[in-house]
Image (cartoon, rainbow, N blue to C red; front, side):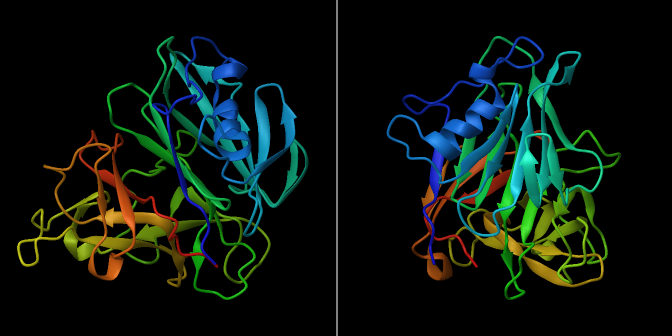
Length: 310
């Protein structure tokens, strides 16, 4: 059944501001407030995405999707170091208060987005969400290139997959973690420590790390490709689904609403939009420039209420 997808931007009328000049981040302008306004309360003419916030604390909160698997996202704005404020996130299968949960993913530690420079200047951001999945794109240095974090359901190829919940952040908390930048794997036996799923497809207890792949033959790096832009044969934009694989070599599922750009990025600008054609007719798309490879890539987000859902 289709869900309602909403795009939230810092440029919207009444949008919450994301800024900080202190650690912990001020509660009126921190990530907890940002997620609350977009996912739970809504603002201006933008409706809420349909989540709840069952547990709160000082500079932290737990969020619960309104549909799908309904596993918990814990957000903590209380830490930072040097010139950076950190968005610290955890996934949990269950929670009993804002600090207590079972079935964590990652199993140990947290995912830390250290890309937010402490400043009195408000930072641009984009959130795209429905009642199951949320993408946050953060311009942490105010340079019109973004890092990204994701929490929520993916589309699973296993029927009745009760643990199809994915948690990704551009992480400083694990050595070698790639986050959402160079995020496509060359082989089906590789995973990224910043890509966490609640459990394996076997449903054995414990979170696992997982890998992402797309159409690697046509890509030069994770977020850009090698096909001419537009494609010279049909004058169209080419995209690929992004798939999730476990290190046993099985393809678990695919991302909801996120696509791989298969062209170089010259000619595509941040916040460009376009309608789909051919097999993608009826969908609309948004380009967001990527920060993790110096702006040389692009996230493609489906903005129509057409995300694959199970």
